[in-house]
Image (cartoon, rainbow, N blue to C red; front, top):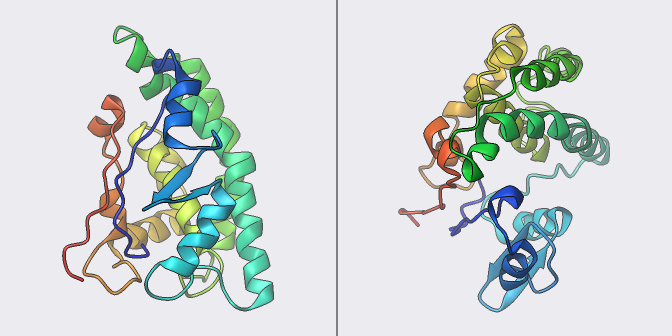
Length: 212
């Protein structure tokens, strides 16, 4: 989205026996997520967000208008605090537990319960998107970025009804899938998201920019 090349790696708790050691090798403070550029480390989601806003190309994703910035943070908080735990339950069952046990079959009761618990938040998002191009305003913000990730995970994990049954969410997500990154490169940021098969293998796509 911000035109920054990145080599991306993930560390899955259930699939790594010496997790603390692995994290400390990647992050000097053992804080995740961690971003390294040359000899400079940025640790923690808030710090990486601020660094990317300043370091990336194009406009900062955080709106300059204080009211819009507050609304962005509100919707980011809903995504991280309320949506993420339920999405994690779904992805753990559908993808993550297979990493350490390939014979594992998802507990559909867990998946269905999490799917049901997510409906209230997707309903709220659907209402927020009424008449809006993006979640906060007519520009893409960090709110859209966070929600895009969780909505995408729901889709590739088979919980499509959360999207398909809500017209505004579906229309917004279709726009997200095809919009060019705001950094100025000829890139569709959504193309960097993992496919179902990549998620099953625990793979992330690194970000490569070819047209500086």
